[in-house]
Length: 369
Image (cartoon, rainbow, N blue to C red; front, side):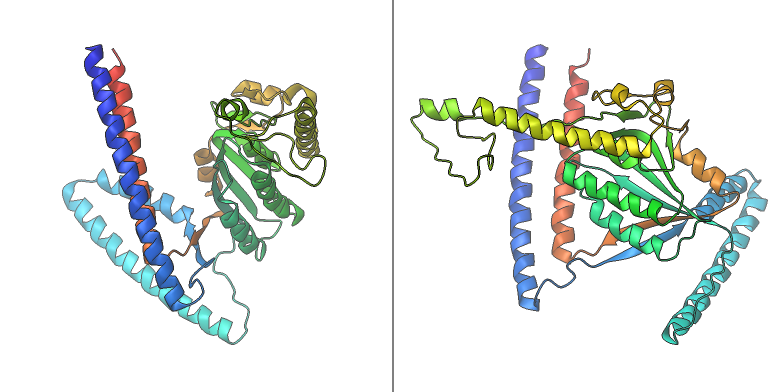
């Protein structure tokens, strides 16, 4: 049985390798065609462009509630209710078009547009972090848009999920959240799964931090690792010449011979960044014991409250559902505009990723007794 599983695993690895190679080849071809078309049209049409999308969470919640209520009716009553609902939706869409047309005319005349919604607003942003904090570009646009209209009576909620990454990327992301606090707009961060390292660097900026009971918070530390191939190259009689101007222009290298002095300097740099990280956390959460939580550990549940890493336990769903009772809850997101070739190549990459995840999941299940 074990031999069969090994053969099956090797077969899957070959298939995944082949699909990955095909995906890369297609992406390169498509990317080349897209670049050629872009050059033919002129300088990067659509580059950096996008659209701000705003959805009303209150209406979404009302639709769910109404759909459930209708489904519990008897067939005749359900049919009539669905008919009434379609008629109402049609009237609302027509009214929305009229209001949008009126607003465009007002903007054209330079008049101030009076919003129909008079309740305080809750603006909701989602931040799904990766190693490079690549969503920071969308975040800065979303924050800029919100600050053009938000008041201290409103609030901004960030649904944050990140295990951290580069110092520069997450430092910039945290700075975007600092802009919200600087504008005196209340900032709430909800962590449903993880806010560690750079993720916590962002989360701690909030006026209020809410974590799900099993969400992981902390990892207030800095880590860096650099592989070194010097001994391998030395065995092959390959020399690497590294020329620098400045004593510490390079401390640790991939191919050269590292020195104790270089290692000491590299560690000194890491310690300096760690000190800045601790100062950042201590500035926004002065009630916690920074020396107690700056060890790089993570905590969840009651430990999060005990260490002062969060203010309350709960999920973002609970918070937003309660907010809908008194506020207009708006989901705000920036969507980057992509050309046809970019969408196609991105679709190929996503399909390969999904297939790889499914195959690895099946392989893992096959190994289970």
